[in-house]
Each structure stands twice: as C-alpha cells, then as structure tokens.
Image 1 (cartoon, rainbow, N blue to C red):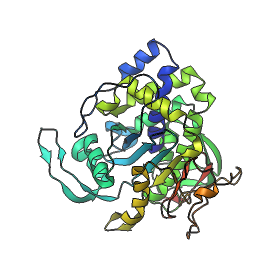
Image 2 (image 1 turned 135 degrees about the vertical axis):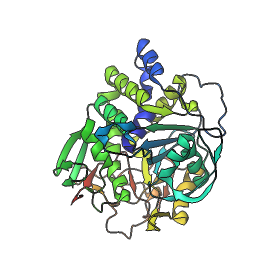
Image 3 (image 1 turned 180 degrees about the vertical axis):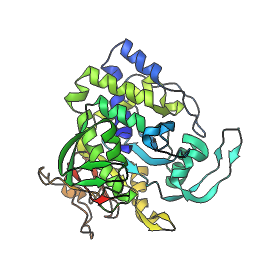
Length: 389
C-alpha cells in the first residue's frame, strides 16, 4: 500500500498545472475534510510554483478497508500498517523516503482523543497502533517524537485508494525473480514481468507470506520494487505527458486520501508536485528504518538508525548498500557506476546487493548495510515463496 500512496501524492498533484479550469476545480472539490496536526497553525497558501525550502511529509496507509467486506474481516481494526516519511531537500535536489515497519516499538506521546480529552503517553507500543489511538495527528506526533523531525504535512490512504490510483496510471510493471505463492490472500505470480493494477496491485503490496522470509521487513523491500517502478512511470511522458491520465490520478488521490489541513490547499498540492517531479530518479532513495526482532515485535536499532535520521536533519542525500530480503537487483538491467565520492559501505550480508544508481550531485551519506532499500532509478525484482494458510 505504501507505494501508491507515497509516489502518487508527492508527484501526481502537479496535474493542476497541466489540466485546466474545470479539472482543477474538480480535484479541489474532491479533497475530503482535513485533519489538524498537533501544534499546527494556519498560514497563507504558497504561490503557484515549486515549493520554497524543504518538505517533510508523512504518508500513512490504513488496513481497515473502511468496512468493505472484500478486504476481509478486519474486526473494526484501523491500524497504520504503512508509515512513510518523505523528506525533500531544501534545494530540491534529492528526496529520502523512510519506511518505519509496522511492528516497531516506539514511545507514543500524549494525543488528543475524539471527545476533546487526551490519551496519556505510553512508553512503548507498536507504531501501527497509533492511528486507532489518536488518528492521523497521533501518528504524526509519534514519528516526530521518535525522529526529532518536524513534519508539516500528512496524508492517510485506504486499500480502495490503492486500487483506484493503480488503475489511473494503467498499471505498474513489476519484475518477479522467484514465483510468489501467497495462499493467505490469494496472490499467485509466476517468475517474470507483470503489469499490476486494481485488485492485484493491492494484493502485491499487502503480500507478506508470499515474499521470501515472510516478514514485514521483507515485505517493505518487496514494496520498493513496486514503488520505484511507479515513480518511473508517473514521471514518464506516458503519465505526465497525458493530461487525462494525470487528471484521473490526481482525482483518485484527492478522493481517496485524508489530508492534514496544511495539505488541503490546491496551491500547496501543486507546489509539492512541481517540486518533486523534477528530482532525478537516482536522487530519490527509499530506506527502511533498521530493526531487530524482539519482545513479540521489532526493536528499533537507534544507533544505526540515527545515521539515517541525522542525514535527513542535516539535509544530506543518502545512499543505501543493498536491497535486503524480499527483493534483488534485476540482472537484465545495466548497472551504472556509483560516484567514488559516495561509495556505499561494503555489506557483510550475502542478501544485500550493491547500489546500482549514480550518486546525487552533493556528496551522499553512505548508510550502514543494515539499512536496506534502493533508489527510484534501480530496477529490482521481487523474490517470492510458497507460504500461507
């Protein structure tokens, strides 16, 4: 789910500069009522054009299905199983996209409740319980407290939105290195290349047991296969050069996302879209926050994770050392030579693949091998397995 939400909101809303008049009005009116973030104050919307300065945006994916039986019996659960922090550099030359695994334990700050009161702070809870605890604003406050990074914008998307947005771009091409056989959710993909949209796209993004290792950590790396391909397609002439496709994608995003009040203004959405669309693919890097298994969930590796978070705070681009479990490099694609000034740290893990994309123009921070991911320029393949009940 994370893939479509992150890339679509950040890039596709540039459509307002391409689709004239009535289309812009339709997108603006499709935007749902907003959410007030903790400590948020109203300011004037930006002028039309690229956003000035850096951007910190949190994308939250909910598994509730909004009561739709086709997504299974969720028992009233509204868990934020996808949590992605998108940081765009001050000079707009690079973007770092950080995924926080859903089972990672974090301290949860006090959050407002629906009755006007306040939920007390909790010293440790899984991050995916914060949405049901205090809504989108509580998820933002939790990530802010954990990282020390101020987040101005936030958006939440449900599974139905993933389906509509994948349809709007005409499907996303993914490579499967080893067949996926996920009996739990009914996803079966042979090795090879597949164009996924609609129901099959959201199954691919949800699949856990069909991915090598069967863990949420591996699932995130598998989702990066979809995300990198989606970003390449959205930035191509096939989408950005097609006003109808752009309008449909922007409308699907606006109609299926709950946005923070700071993000609801059409000028703001346009400004963010214009800013992100010109960042080179090799300078958009997806990185998973490092964790270890323990205590019935995942324990954050703060000492290693701080290398990533500190790079964001310093507004520096990053480079990852390998894809990790769940994904491998596509052997059929050429491998560019990395910049000597930003060579990644050698990996001690046999499952990690070397970075194939060029370094950003500013010297990048080479992340430790425990932080897995890829750039949007990399072509990767999912590694599947047969599993599930």
